[in-house]
Length: 367
Image (cartoon, rainbow, N blue to C red):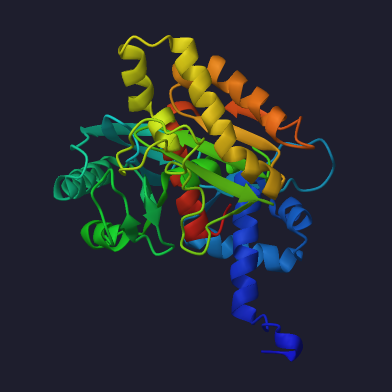
């Protein structure tokens, strides 16, 4: 370490950073010449040319031919990520009825889809078998180079992909990332489904850098980004709002054994059961929206968030419920009248799209 505890930047670290910078620039801005790439990244032309040469040799970048331009001189050769040849296997284990997966290329095209029935809550072995089967099936359906397998799953998950707690799946201290890597022989990255959804909204959906994505399905969770960085917490449990008690009036019995947890008001199953039981649908949705706002208002105020994105069934979350969240937030926060509350732009595929971002970040350094 250098003076004042600063870490010395070694040449190999600088090269890794510059390589990721080139890849990220191409991913976000599209094909360009080496000269334009040097200008965009601030790297020298020599460094840029060397990096592009390495990336072409590694099969990550392709040359697309000369650019047609009116200005005099030799036209520049365009380079870009191999968007159709590089693919990701994406898994979403958060759906209330099935495990879903897809093969997605870097152009965002979904090349294949698969789904398997969701085992009953707590059936840990069956849940793992179903996950392994789904991943292996999709890997066989890939038509290009697979950069990795990205998985979004409910529960508390470490940076190393260990599911420390997922009551709905029945998993406890399961090294899912390593388990799948050993099975498939390709890189695997596993993260909480709400965190994965937040990555998708920020990287692909135009969300701000200070955003909370509330994922509603079998359970309820949130992914929070501040200044564009995912907030994980000291126990990798940031955003676990589903079992926060909302209100002091008791409330429905939750699967965790407590009364009045947010999940007992807001999960898809809870909403469906209350409406099927004869309750007025608008009353149920207003009640759930108010409880959600009670849970997230302190977070919005403490972190100065500018946006809340709702991810889940639009027929339940949009309209009455969303409007109630907006009104209740305004009543319960100061200086946050302009906080946007909207539905996810990614629809039902938000976790699958986020799993692609998970792999781009973990394998290429692109975020």
